[in-house]
Amino acid sequence: MSSALYEGVLGASPGELLRSWAGEPWLDDPRLGRVTDRGGFEAWVTSTKEWLLDHDAELRPVDAIRTAERTVEEVAIDLTIDGERRELPVAIAADRTADGHLTAIRLYHSMWPLIRDHEIRVPMLEGDRDLAGPDIVGEYQRALAAGDLEAVLATYEEDAVVREPAGGPYVYSGRESFRRIYTLQFANGGGIPLQRCQITDDGRACALEYNVVRWGASEMPPQAGLAVYVRGATGKLAYGRIYDDAAPPAVSDSSAAS
Image (cartoon, rainbow, N blue to C red):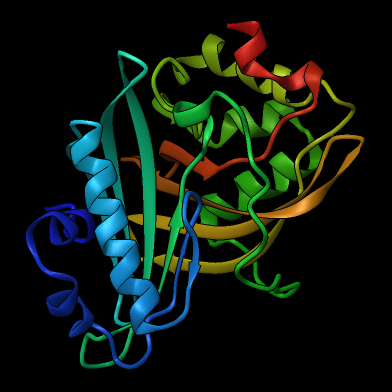
């Protein structure tokens, strides 16, 4: 497994990478914004390569989900920022034609590891009221939306691991750890109903692209996110990895609690 996008940025020219596209490039990046043409994509490649090199980036592939029409790749990027090494977890959703050429790339990550703050990420996909998560993923989504702590815990394997968007210290494992973090998540008067947009599922793992619109009692500006759920041996969730930049209400802020 390789971190194909960033390895391509580091190892190929913008012109070479342009040949991967079926037509005009379409790419959306939390740091650099949206690209919709060849010139913009070439500038994005050049700027991203400089950024990776300037921050002594080390790429660590995490996982990948591949279907006929889409790839969702996860990579952790270790960067030197303000004299310290920080982890930036990134998810890359790439839509493809039948012959494998790109039609769109959506990058998802939090800005917290980079600037110690959040930035609103406007939606890239529309919500689909009829889209329901499959099997245990759907059970988890219903429990999350309802703020049902016990139902959420029941969806996880005993040795499951959950990672928040900021990565680094925001990784949890074990029943009591889960109970603490989800109690905090639901402290704002309810659950977190996500506006589901698109699912990529290979049977082993499921990636859900969504918009955050509410956190408990607080309405939020709609903002894009992606979560990856990996099924375990019993069919429950073994891993949950989240990629968004939604700023939680103060009572649910794990950075303030850590």
